[in-house]
Length: 237
Length: 272
Image (tube, rainbow over all chains, first blue to last red; front, side, top):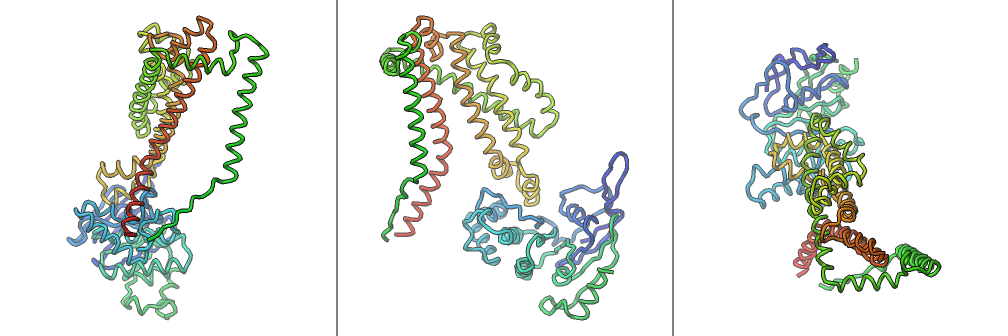
């Protein structure tokens, strides 16, 4: 996917305040790209533009054929319908794609199983913990036949252990179906362990400061490695 | 498979609460009886037994059911009208600030006008049978409207965004997001407007005296100084309101009951 010369801003009292000005980015298909930047720099806005949740003033978003079609979006919160069970929440998004109810239920259960929640399928979201709810939303996003995954800090607001278990749940599902993923975060270690490419971003108006490509396979990565320590240092200078 | 069903005994505190309520009823009846004995004038305050006797006579009297049916019919008609019109405009106003601004004066007038002025004016404009319907509508509409309008604002924008991302069609969004989000507001609005409708319909019947109706009978009994009959009709009005509330509650718990029944059947199937 290519973002070319994207400009997005808000007009407040006749004054145009740019969030993104002539912003360009190339994302390799079938990879995870992490966008790391300070809070409020505009990375969430960029994700919302790609997700077609907000319009932009100028520029172009060009997708390759395999990225065309529905998108999966993981928000900061799970965003589950509180009146439906976990299973129903996942099954519901599959309705336009699978006519048979049996197929939908089976697919939903299959993905709930992958995030270790098959025993909780009949539970309502408010009967689960925050981490479990977010796992349901990960299962929903992967069960949905999306071609592009957009992640807006979905592992925030959770304790470290839960966070890594969610990151692992995500990576397990992603390895089975390597969708182009754009991942917004301000957590550097998380980005370095998950992504193929980490893009370091500036404050508003957001610009790319640096693009780091990580060739080390995910299983072999360790934050204690000199290479990763050096990479982390670049974000804190 | 043998299943042991243990009925939970009624909670101690529930018993005490029920006892207190019963005691309150007995005290009220006692005050009534005491007042009747003290005044010793059935025209001013007949005793509970005299009132019950009057009630029994009323029930045996021929157009009794017709009076009740007519009043219930009026109340239901105005309630349905309130529910439909209130929901329609409530939803419109919830989504559009312009519609809200346009409807504000109507709402203020409806809320601030005394019930009696509405009834008297309506009696100038309409026939006596239509007055209860019209008055109840004007009084109940703002209640339903305000609840529904607030309900629209309760629809979570975040969940709405989620439905956009996952490509929900407008119908699917309505069924799975909008209606469930607004259900509590619909229920509160309907409940509040229903209890208001009974009172206004009967008040309008008292003032306009249509041919049949609980309020008309009350008015006629009052004119003939049949105080026991006025009280008997009042008891009927109370019973109607209580019955309406009860039916409404039963209707609300019906889907849950069906679900429990279905789950129980499933469990039986699993056990077999």
